Amino acid sequence: MDLITQVNRLEVAPNSLALWGLGQMGLILKGPDAVIYLDPCLSDTIADRLFPPPVLPEQCTDVDYVLCSHEHIDHLDQATLRPLAVAAPQARFVSNRWCVPLLQECGIDSHRIIAPNTLETIALPDCSLQVTLTPSAHLAREIDPDKGDRWTGFLLQWNGVTVYFAGDTIHYDGYEQMLRDLPPADLAVLPINGRDWYRTQSGLLGNFHPDEAAILARELGWDLVIAGHNDLLARNAIPMGWIADGFERHAPRQAWITLPPGQLLTYTKRDSR
Image (tube, rainbow, N blue to C red; front, side, top):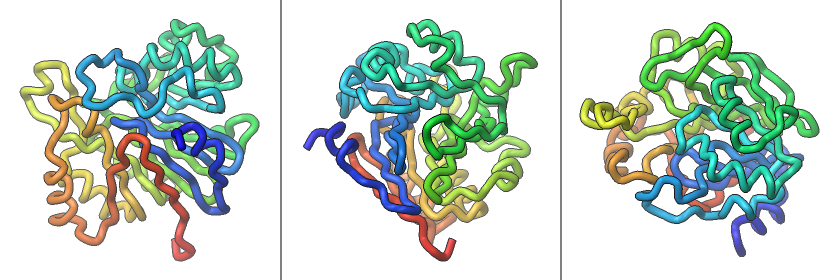
C-alpha cells in the first residue's frame, strides 16, 4: 500500500493521532478531521539527500494544512510547496511572518496563508486542531518588531493529544519556562543532530546535542520523544548511537524513537497523563 493510500484509509481513534515520517523534521499528522504536513521537504532541491522522498508533492492531494516552522530549505522547500499547493487547492499554509513572502513566491494566495503571532493560540478553520506558534533559537532567537520571531515551532492540541514540534532550535534563556507555561505536551518532536564550530562555519546550523535533549525531556516529563533532523544530510548528522547514549545517561526511562521516512506511528494518550 502506498503512503497516501494508507494516510487516507487510516481511521484515527479518540485520544490518538497518526504520524508518518517524511525525513529530516518532516511529518504527516492525521487527526479525526484533517491531514496536516509539518516541514515537508519532498523535492530533489537538496541534491545530496540520503534517501528519495517517500511521497512526491504532486501526489499530496488530500492535505488540509501545511505547517512550516521557518525559512530554511529543509523546512520550507519551495520546490515542494509549489506543486503541492496546486495538487491540493484546499490546503492552507501556517507559518511565521518571516515566511509569508516565501509562501507567496510559491504562488500561494494570501487568503490561504495563516501567520499567527508568537505564543498566540489559534483554532484552524474547518477542523478541531489548535495551534500555538512557539519561539525557537537557531542558533539564537531573532525577533523583528514587525515580523516577530524568525525561528519558530508549534504546539499542537488535537483529539486529546498535545504535540510539541520544535522546528530547529537549541536551548536558550527562558526556553524551558516558555514550554512550562504552555499546555504540557505528550509527544515532543526535537531536532537532535548536534552542532559544532566546523558545521556552523560552513553554514550548517546545528540543533540539540543528545544530552541536552534528554535532560529537557526528563525535566518536562514528555511521554515520548521523536528524534528528528538527523537523516537527510550525512554532513549534518551524528551517529544514532550518540542519541541513544545521551538518553541512556540522562533519561534512561524516557521513551524515544526515530521515525524513518514512510514509517507510521499511531500514538494514543495514556489515561494516566
